[in-house]
Length: 359
Image (cartoon, rainbow, N blue to C red; front, side, top):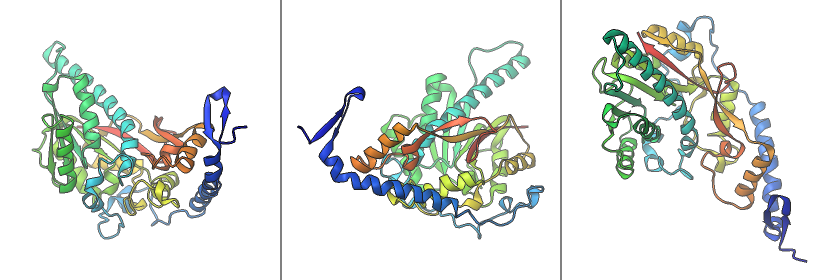
């Protein structure tokens, strides 16, 4: 009798028995920990200032929260060297969620380009096969994780001579990492990076066609002043694309309790104070910001939601992480239990994306 391992012939799976028994305690410990985490977040709802939902002009989130927030935006400079560490870095979670964000932005850019061609055709009297140069700005780009993925997709689909991509971030360390990595992957000639904050963008008025702010607005204390600057640099007819976090209980559980305050520290994907729940923005507040700055929302918001894997996959991932000790998954606890997907507006509970045209 071979007691060193057993086989599940139907699934062609060979599991070492003795190491499994030796490490089984990790599994029995991990399950109660995960359950206790869920109970902890359930019975620890966030405490927030009162919000007048019927009058967003008086909403505390649309005021300058510089002296009220606990958010620490210095972490992007402090941990700049970890931006491109997809497994153990403090920003590994970004690598896990970025692809679905890029999917949404590409979808919206494709729609916008087709509408631009149609608009120009109505003026010129014919539909041009090519397009004019398009300026795309990624504001709050960090070390260029999303900037690079988006640029690759744009260059693959459109004429590289007609796409100009700009990445902007207030962290010098992050921008240095962005430039370095862009050189390493051969994108330095297609993307220009600059150190600047959203409050004062280094672009001329009406010079940007597509402006993206991904996972940025919830970090900005004075969101009104930044949206004014967005409106200034966008040319009439240009499109503003964003994704941010809804001020909801689900967002609190995912992005605060699990992502940065996880009871299992090794599963946290960002440092403490990366996010501040009171800085999250409700969709109605985004509508108010659009109205104030001459932007018109194009359609219902699209949700970004964590879709759970089936139980077998979750158990398999738990086995790899806690028993085989294969290392921290790129997306932390999210990568163990599910993947991020785009959902209809009536289904999102935590994160959402949208687009608006500059009038």
